[in-house]
Length: 120
Image 1 (cartoon, helix red, strand yellow):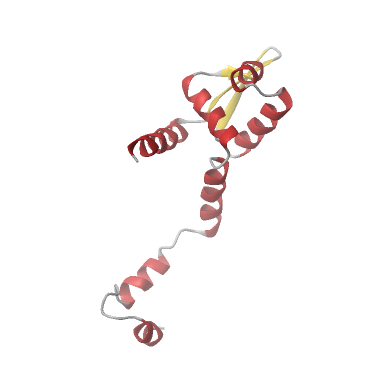
Image 2 (cartoon, rainbow, N blue to C red):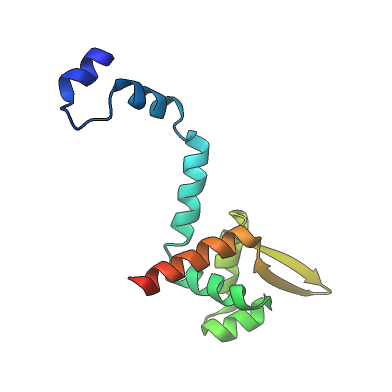
């Protein structure tokens, strides 16, 4: 492997030992897939609006439909998608289900990305 790397690299490369170490420490496939799923969820404007709204306040499905001006079925579908990825969680009070962000990690990721967008 070292010979192959040397043949393809020039003086600007990091070197074989660093590449081998990086390869050994590469993120696990299931972790990479899970992270990609979260970013894919954030790639949909409707889900971004839901997350942004829940960042500010816990809401029931009905209130989310009013805020987003969408049908209950569509909102419920998106909430189920986000819940399956542990982005949102639900809390049931009687027959009413309230949704909020699952934990502060999701909030931090979202707020950091909002700041990034405002900075650029």
